[in-house]
Structure formats: structure tokens, C-alpha cells
Image 1 (tube, rainbow, N blue to C red):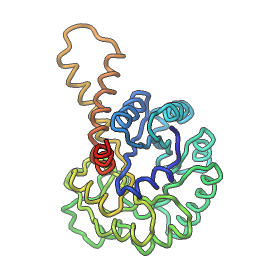
Image 2: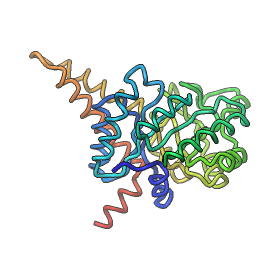
Image 3: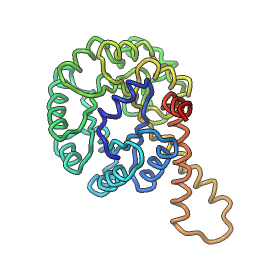
Length: 293
């Protein structure tokens, strides 16, 4: 069932759980993520990042994502992740994406507000939702627990007072905030500021989004959800799980194999990894449903 981000976030807010958002730059990933969500009977978000255009064009993977979302037995939002240009974001909306994420975090606050508001009006005209971002977590491996320059480190965190103003001025449906996570692989344990999550959620009165979810401990996931995180972006470790399993299987191959066997191994491993992640993110929802049965 294809739905927009706001519908999924409304349920997450009410139930105090988080929904996993997984990038799906190929058919196997789309199939694996939706199957995992159906296995657990939970809503899910599948995403295409603009940086993955070189992996597969949005005009090719987008219609596949939307078709699988429509056929799914659970609510599925199809979102553009880290959209950066008007033409690309408009293309996603015209394809039928039900949410966009505009990343203006590198812009000055006033310019970020101006641009995000423009994209919010565009998304809402398509009955789609929008996620904005305030604060910077860097492109990759930029925040570490052993960082020595605390003043510089603090500058990357989202200001809760600004977050409230940002939400009020832009009309966004969810806010990605910086509280210690980073994109890609961690080289040391992240230092997560749960007080920032709690203050942003309380003051801005909007679902908080965690980017850089791969590599965060289950305990920290649970703490972040308790403090207001309602959407968790997770891709790097899911993709690595698929690659690692394929590598492991190939070591034991003694007869000729076909490519479809390799792609199926990757899909199976991704499904298992995503299912594990969803069990943590939507733990409260899954628990409540099991009690009801």
C-alpha cells in the first residue's frame, strides 16, 4: 500500500516507535526490504538517493519502487533521499514518489529556510511529504567519540531553538537533525546527544529523523526512539551484509554458478539484516501487535 511520509510518521508518533528507511538502488534491495516489512507486518520507507543516480537512474528504479509499494501488504512510503536540485526533486514527484528530502543543511540558516519552504510547497502540491535537515553530520566519518575539539564538534549539532523556528517557517513534515551520527562507516563509537533529540522533538513538535543509522548500537537506537526519533535511515550495513554473504558463499563454490544465484544470495542476506533492524526500530509496534494476537 503506497502512502506518504506523514501518514507513516503520524502512526509512529502515536505509537512512539521508529520506522526504518532503507535505500534500494536495485531490484533485489526493493524486494528484500518490502519482504522484511511484510514478514513483521510493519510500515516501511524505501528510498532512492540522488547520489545513487550513477548506480541506477531514478527513471529506471523509481517506477519499480512505486509498483512494489502499491502491491505491498503493509504501508510503504517511497521517498527521495537527499534531493539537491529542483529538476531532480520534481522528477521524483512526477514519477509518483510520496515523499522528498531536501538537504539544505550546508546552507546558511536563512537560505535553508527559504529553499526548504519552496520544496515543501512543491511536495504538498503533489500530496507528498517533505523532510528537511538542520545541522550537519558530514558526508562520511566526521563525528567521533574521541574528538578533541569539543567547540568545533558542537557546531555540527542541531540547535533545538532554531529547529522550532525552522519547522514553523518551512512547514516540513519531519526533521533530520544532527546529534552525533554520521553517514557511512564509523571508525569509532559515535557520541550521541540524546538531550538534543529530546529538545528538538519537544520544541519543534515534529518527528525527528536519524541519518547515519548503520553502526549505531541497539541500545542507542532504543534511547533515540525514546527521545523522539521516528524515522531511521539505514543503508550502509544492509548493503555490506549482502556483499559479505555473497563473498562467504563464493568461497565454498565447487561447481559453476549463475548470476541469479549470486543476486539471490545478496537479497536473502539483505532481507535478514533489514528484518533485524526493523525489529529494533519498530520494537514497540511489533510487541503491541503480538500482545493483541
